Amino acid sequence: MSITAVKGMNDILPGEVETWQFLELSAREVFGLYGFSEIRTPIPEKTELFCRSIGETTDIVEKEMYSFSDKGENSLTLRPEGTAPVMRSFIQNRLHNLDPVSKLYYMGPMFRYERPQKGRYRQFHQLGVEVVGVEDAKIDAQVLAMLHQYFIRIGIDSVSLQINSLGCPECRPGYRQTLISYLESRLDTLCAECQRRYQTNPLRVLDCKAQGCQAATVDAPSVIEHLCSPCNDHFRQVKSYLDLLNIPFEVNARMVRGLDYYVRTTFELVTDQLGSQNAVAAGGRYDGLVESLGGPSLPGIGFAIGLERLVLMKGEQRISAGGPQLFIAALGEEATERAFVLMSQLQAAGVRAEMDYLGKSLKAQMRRANKLNATFTLVLGEEELESGQAQLKNMSDSSQSVVAMDSLVAMLTEKLG
Ligand code: HAM
Image 1 (cartoon, rainbow, N blue to C red):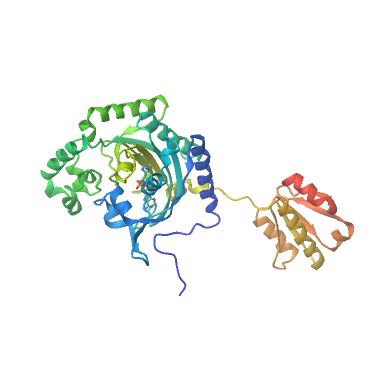
Image 2 (cartoon, rainbow, N blue to C red):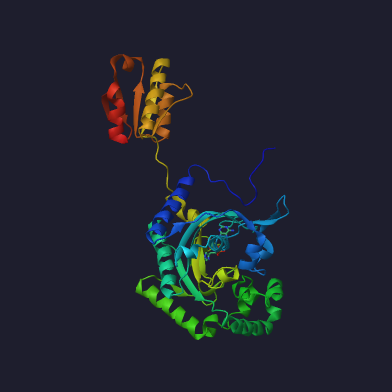
């Protein structure tokens, strides 16, 4: 039996990879405009990094990590997300000494042992950004403006931005306690999972899809109504800067995030096109994270976009690779050899050139040129070699022109290169 890929991990094949390249290239362009530089970190990290940052009681750390011991008995984990590794690297390489404001972006595979379904995989890819060093609400709005701009650039408009504030270590504990007391009074209507976690992670109950939990939390106390005055001011400023930049958003006070490091601003870009996996991008502030990982006390904010979800949304609008600019159809040994040299010269000069390698008939070669979507074809046979001239056929309108063989490379390079 042949070997297949690991469940929930997908190949990205020619034909679809062009859409990925377009999405990645557009990210590089847009993020570059906003002053972001790329950072690349290893795929495995020490397991402790994720336990300490994402949080011991989160679904990711409790159930979803690809953790293993290496041959030296070190516990390693394939990164389930990018923020913690980037902060680890930021601290280790003292990037704060290079610039008081670090703007970083990354792209690559992440791993979570979740139940695979449409839009949810075990190896998936994120495009992420992180800004370290700015507490001012302008940067929250700037990061969201960049996300907005990226979606305009890639031509996806069926998304909406939801924002919330989760407070800070000053005000969150009070809210948490109020929420626990509220949930305690409705404990028997919660699902088994929420009955287990309502004390360790009460905010997750607000996010639970079970009918009983949703009904029980309709009138739950709202986090926004429990913000301390600095958090309230910060949230008010974020909203007013977003208005100033004409970025549409709605406040969703029930939005909680599955990672513990968030404080204050959190957000999600949601769509109704992907069924239950409706978050295309998500992020927020993590002001205490750098310090809790042993670095300086610096605020941070960022987001990550799920690339598979973007590709699904691009759907029919897929990007296709350009076919060859010239297909050389050759007949006979001598002409085939000439075509082979000509093709190599054209490729070296920057022209996408192609020929037949399988000894096919002229008719079959022309069919292949058509299938590959070649812009031009050139037929080379004994006659052409003798006369030193050949017919160049424009495949879109079937018009033909005679070209001299010895000036072919210069002529085609100028025309097509
Ligand atoms: P996250 O919400 O866990 O946040 O993931 C961000 C995005 O990654 C999701 O909105 C979704 O599009 C995509 N995603 C997550 N899990 C899967 C999966 N199993 N299959 C396919 N796509 C998935 C974070 O990871 C944070 N590190 C984001 C962040 C950056 N916050 C601050 N900076």
